[in-house]
Length: 337
Image (cartoon, rainbow, N blue to C red; front, side, top):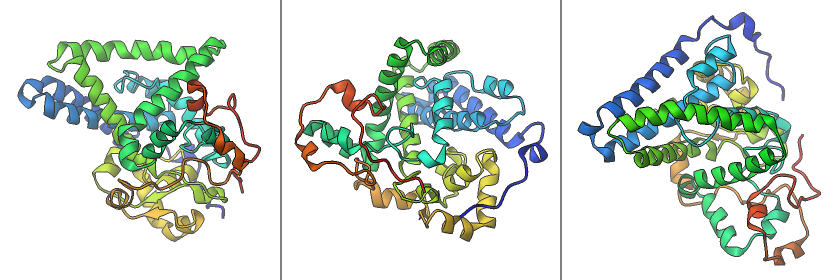
């Protein structure tokens, strides 16, 4: 079911999207305040507060890569140049996320870089202990605890291989990332927050983002049915800049975060029909249902494979975590209908 067309971005966009610019100011102001007042707050309180603003910075990076808040992309990217989150180069986030927005590939273990599914063939090659790790990662608790580490391991292994192959774009991403780390590490080192504590806050910020991504997509034969709506307007929706209205975002990726709830409200029934009612009322519902229970299997349920492969128990560790086409691939892809 096709969505009605939106007016062109050029006819709607102001010169500056002030709500987004205001959130940028709030983010950096909050980070600065926590770093400045750590002596009064204490490290135990400062770390989770920093994690909130680090997660907000990542949400702002997501806005920027989609062309906000300025018409000039270079000016927008200058706003989020400091590597506040420490771990993920912005340019890699941008390239991989824009690739993720090719909706026919959503949830494909090879073609969707944000998929949490594995090809059943690759899954069958994993040792039992590693399958247990990935099963735990499929609980919301596990996704928050292990998810950042597993994502970073996979990213770094694949990017190291890409750099070794001479891919200049990947190398550039890490050079710019190192430059973006410099002001962050200097400012943190001048504050009362130990560098190790800031690194813990960055990991916790990544964990918060895993709450958002946990439900975003599911395996479904129909492409529109793969993307969720979480009708939440609470603190997490604010922190994620309304990306919980994810089906709306995928339909209209150029629309700024502050317009997504209104667009959904105007065409609520149409969006829910389109995404086959992949819908939750709040993040509280998410925690109640999935904090200690898996939503999905790890192997992609729309990819079929030979049962004999389940008997394979030996595996190369790097290959086990690498879901790129360099590994063993199934002949059966998720349907893109």
